[in-house]
Length: 439
Image (cartoon, rainbow, N blue to C red; front, side, top):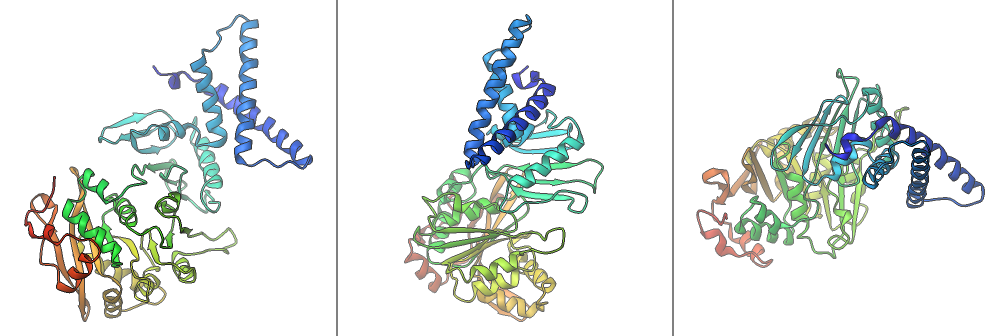
C-alpha cells in the first residue's frame, strides 16, 4: 500500500480550510501595508504555513504520546494540502505520473486510468462526494485558461487546457453523475523526426512535409478524434522558420506553440471566449480569425476547424497568408472537403456547395490524413488539390495507403510542386520507392 493510500483525507480537508483562512488573513494584512503578492509569493507563503502547521501537529503528537508521522508521510500530507489549494486536488497525483495517458471519472469514485501502453485500471477516488468534485471543477474553471469558465446547471460543460497541456472536459447536470475526462498530451514539443521515431510517418513523408511547410503550402491535417492531429500540427509547425510570426486560433487552448520561445519566439495564442451570464462578451473562433489578419501574421494556424470559422479561415488562406494550417475531423482524406462544405453551409454566410468547393480549392494545397487503429496512428494519405469541377474538389493522391494502411508514394508529384519542394529541401528520390521508407 502506498503512502497516497494511507493519507487521512479528513485531516487534509481540515488543514486545507485552516491554511486557506490563514493565507487570506496574511494576504489582507500585507495588502493593507501596500504589499501585494503574486502567485509565486502566495505559493511560497503557503508552503511556509503548511510547514509550521505540520511542526505543531508533530509537537502535539509527541506530547500526547501518539504516532508521529514519518518524513515521507509529512511530505505527502503537505503535497496533498498544497494541491487542494493551488493545483488540481486529488487529480494532481494522476497528472504528475508521466506514464498515465488518460483519466476518466464517472462520479467521484468511479475512476479509470489508461497508461501509455494501453493498460486500463481503476484508480482512487478523486473527491469524497460528487458535490465536492463539482466544486473542485468549478475552482479549476476559475483558475485556468485565459478567461474564467463557469460550470453550473446553465453551463453544464467545462472544457479547458491544464497547465501541463492536458485537456480537461467535464459535464454535469445532463447525466446522473458528474463526468470528467482528461487527455494527456505526451508530445508537446516535437518535430517530424520524432514522428518518424514514433512510427507516424516515414523518412519520405518527413522530407516531403518539411519542404511543404517551408515552401508555405497551405495544409489541412485531417483524421478521427484522438488520431493525433494536434500532435502532427505541432510537428509541422516546428518546421516554420523562427523569424516568422505565428498566430494560433483555438476554441480551447491546446496547441501550445507559444510555450516554446526557442522554437516559436514570435507566437500569439488566441482562445475563443463564451458569453457571460448576461449573454455578452462572446468571442468566436470566426471572430479570432478575422482579428488575426490585423495582427501582421506570417502564418495563421487554427487548432481545429469545426464550425462557422471555416469561411473566414478559407478566406484568410486564399488572401495572402500562405503557409497557414488547420485540422479537421474526417473519416478519410477523400471526404475532407465534404466535411468543410457542411460547415460552410451552416455558417452565417450559408455558402452553397459549389462556392465552398471553389473557395477550398483556391485556399488549400495539401491534405494530410492520419489513420487510427488499435496498432497505432500513422499518416495514410496525402492529397494535393489541383482544381475544382463544379461541386467536386479535384485532388491527386501523392501518398496513398499501402500494405497495412501506411502511406506510400502514389502518383508522381507534379513538376511545378516538385520544383518548389526541391528548392526547400525535398529529396525527390525518396518518392521513387513504391513501398516507402517505413522502419
